Image 1 (tube, one colour):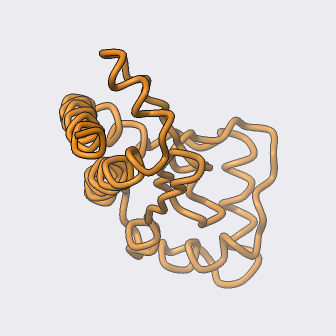
Image 2 (cartoon, rainbow, N blue to C red):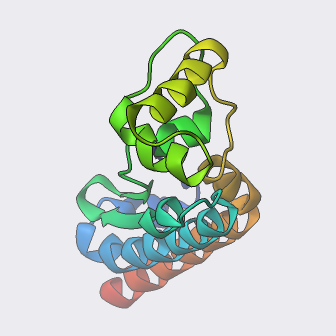
Length: 162
């Protein structure tokens, strides 16, 4: 599960014209996406719940300049249930629960995993958000970075036009 955000820039006609020229936008946009995603990634790593540290270390980011977006998240199967929780009524995979059950004092093998899976089936899993709060808590900094990107685009447009 990934969390993305869209930013709309409103400003002068010069800036709107510059946004149509990929050569003018590419550098400032790349720098903005790098900076903003770096801020969110670092904060999400701090906020991620830790058992083995695998979730925290799996949080990464990638820049999709062609799509004008940055993606921050984890590819781990259990990342989304940690972020959003899980409603009761669905069985989690036993194999994935065996190591967790063993580390937390349940019987070894499938028996311990079954006990944990049954509890999840009955009660669900409470959400422990780390990605969305990282985005929300850094909104002001991201807005500032957006303004800086607009200034960089304007400067690049003027440099090329001048």
